[in-house]
Structures are given as C-alpha cells and as structure tokens.
Image (cartoon, rainbow, N blue to C red; front, side, top):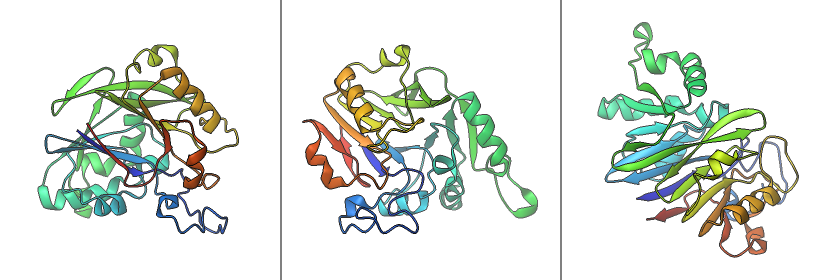
Length: 251
C-alpha cells in the first residue's frame, strides 16, 4: 500500500489569494498547499479520499492513471468541488466510479451534483459515479477500510483507517468510541489547522495532544493555513511532521 498526500492545505489553499505574508511568499515548495486530499494505491487500484477543489492539478502532478473508488469525509466545498474533474477519467475508461460516505454526506453531494450520479442527457453528461453508504468496516480491493466518526465543530465528519494508517481531516473532537478504533497505528494524518484556536478544527496544540493520547509510530499534521511554515516543523516533537503536497508513505 502506498499513501500520498495530494493536498495539505486548508480551504483557501496556500498561498491564499491577495496575501503576501511570509508563508504565502515562501520559496519553499512545501509551503505551496493545495486543498486537503489523499490517495491510496493498493494492488494497482487507486482510492481517492475527497475530490478537492484542486483535484485536476493534484492527479496530473502525481501521474495518477485512474481512480477506482472515492471516499468522502464530508460535504464542505473544499473537499468536494473538484468532483467534475473525474469526467476526464470517464472519457478514457468509461467506468462508473463507486463512492462512499456517510448518509448525510451522500445526500448533500448527490443533491448538489445530481448530474454526476444521474447524468444529464440534454447536456451530454453520462453518469460518472454511484453512491454507497459506509457505516462500518469494509474490504475495498483487498484493503480493510474502516470509517471513523469525528466531529467538525457540531458537524459530523468521517475519518478513515486503512489497515495501520488513519486519515482524520476536518475535526475538532474524536469521540471515545472512535478513539478505540485508532490504537496501534503506524501512521496518523491529522487535522491541525493553525497555531491559534478554531472552533471547528484542532489547532496544532490540540492535535499534538491527540498524538500524545493515541501514540502512533508516526504522525503528520495536515489541513494547514498560512499561519504555519513548513520550516516550523523543527519545533515539533520527535515522530511528528507537517504535511506537504506529494508526501508519500509505503507500507
């Protein structure tokens, strides 16, 4: 299994439009952050987590030849508004891609992008995806995938565990029942928006407390704003790093 961070940035991306702060002006490519997403490659299959606003740029950059399934964490714009970019794969492979998420997420995504699932004959759109509700562990192309219920402020979101790795983006709390599903991790990728507090996201201090509690072998902090320079990572505890676009891990 190979896991690649496609995007490590928050909803505005970094650089943020109109901003000339030190991070937005940085020459370090690791400070150039597209919107948050990952892809899992396993046995020749590619599993995408979220269709970020920057999906086209991300899949071209990482030379991803096809997408075989999509997992959605929630329905916020920065995590779903790249969904139309999947049309390019359909033009080539003519396959309808299965997608998975909570019942609430699937209802909102299905409503807002109905043509993706039903097609639109008058505009020449064919159906691109089919929806599935995920409520418990499942096998996806030989990989055990387990949904992890999270809270993003008061909004439920879904993290995912892939064997010994977990991806928990857009969260401010992990319910006790979910923490029990996150023991023995080799890799934890966790929302850590910025240094200052935020009502709907872990900040860096909060994320580090989660890392201390869960004790994964390796932790990556993602969904970062322009408050955070990649170079600041030297201040993080041993075994903890800031994410950057294109960062990958092999298992």
